[in-house]
Image (cartoon, rainbow, N blue to C red; front, side, top):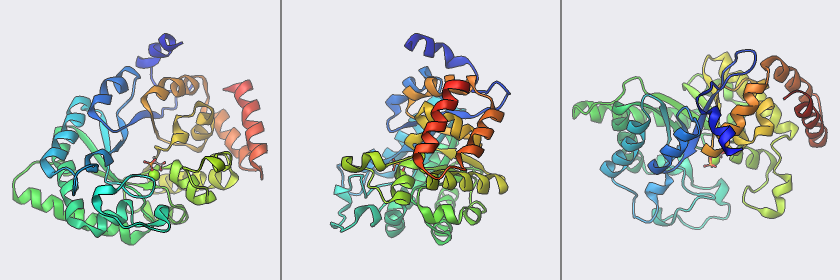
Length: 325
Ligand code: PEP
Ligand code: MG
C-alpha cells in the first residue's frame, strides 16, 4: 500500500472535475523536509517554531532562528514555507519563558498574547523570519488571534521589524504574505472583518473545536466529545471559508482535521484552497481527492449542513463516502 501511495507523489492534487487543492505539510524540524518531499507535499503549511524556544531562557537568538528558518526555506524553494510565530503556553510547554501558573492555561497568557507582551522577543522572531524570506517563499502567520486590535498591533511590530532590516540593508521579501490562525470562536464570528487585514486564513481545528465545544483537547475522558463534525463546527468552517473568499483571500486548514481522509469530501465541498497535515497523511488525502468531484462534494456539504446532530452528519457522510468518494 505504501508503494501505491508513493506513486501518487508526482500526480496533481486534483479532483475528477479539475479542481485543485494544495496539500502541504505540518512540521517542526528541517530534518522532516525529505519526508515531506517523498510524500509529495507542496510546501509547508504550518512550521511550528516552539522547539526553538524550549530549554533556553528567552529562546534561540535571532541568528540561530534565522539559520533554522533559512535551512527549511532554502531546501524547499520555490515551494512556500508558512512559518507560525511562537505559540507557547496552553497545552504547549512554556517552562523557560517564566510563565506563572494559571488557573486556565488554555485561556491564559499564550501564543500571540505572549508575543505582544514581549515585543522584543517577538520582533527578534519576526526579523529572523523576514531574513529567511530572502531565500525562497515565506509566509508568516500568527496563532490565537481573537480580534482586530491584535492583528493591527502585530502589523505595527512587523512594520518596525521590516524597517530595522531596511536600515541595516538586510534583504527580505517586501511582499511577504501574512495570515492568521482561525482557532478562537470570536475570530470565526468576525472573520469578515479579519479577512480585510490579511492575505490568508488558516483554520486550526485542534483549538477551534476545543474552544467552540468547550472540550479540552488534551482530556482523554472527553475525547469522544471532540467532534469535528459537530454542526457548530461545520457552520463555523462554512462561514470562515465564505468570509475568506468574499474578501478574495485564501482559506486554508492546518488542524488535524485536514489530514483525515474521511473529512476530505467535507473540506472539498466547503471550498478550502489549501490543507496542511502530517506528511504521512498527504498521499492518503490526495488519493481521495483525485477520486472525488467538487460538484458532488458541494452537494454533500449542503446536505450535511441541514442536519442537527453529529450522528446524522456522520451517518450520511459514511454512506456518501462508500457510494461516491
Ligand atoms: C490547531 O490548533 O489546530 C493547530 C494547528 O495548532 P496547534 O495544534 O499547534 O495548536
Ligand atoms: Mg492551535
